[in-house]
Image (cartoon, rainbow, N blue to C red; front, side):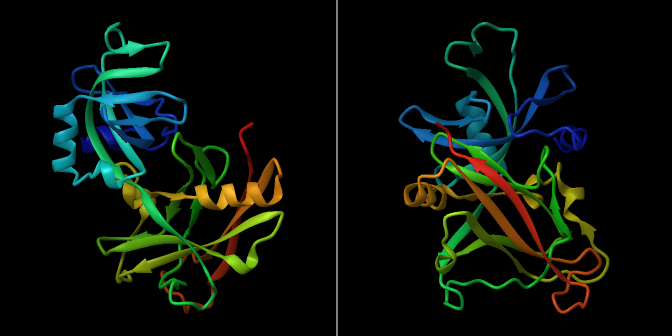
Length: 264
């Protein structure tokens, strides 16, 4: 699986249109999807609107191998194979891909805190990032899911084997009618010695590079408060391209922005 994933570093999309050929010439589809849990079981919904319905045996195998907990996950990075030529596997009317063999799944979920600056819930970074990399045309992207609206990011930072966590903090006192301002917090065990950038892990360990944040409540709150058709979303981060230390004199505060238009 590692070799399959590493071959696709430059072509991942949010809509799961990326694929490569496996050893048996079967396409392997990979990307980010929303997890859906219901009476019919677990399936995955892509941004393009496809329902990816895994076989029960492949889902159980991935749950065990990847420590994947569908009932506790909103957004995941997945890989799967299926025979697109078989009419039993595709329902064009409902956009369902059935009899899918799921080969990989891992949660990308991160916390979003709405709080007061300086309160006990106000987390503080322990390390900077190298920067946010683009997914498509922007460093920020909103995945409009069936159950929520998620900010998708590709975070490049110094990473070896230590634990790293990311969250977004929103200060309620900064609510306004133009922008949702968020602060990216990078916490965990600081890396020492020679370390690589997290982008180098993008395909063999996607959860080291891709992160998603549930902005459903913040976006619905803005829409209800202002009634505006769109909103500017800004993420501010501590950035340093040279070291992973916050007290380095070359640290900067960098802002990344996008305009999100609410669906009609």
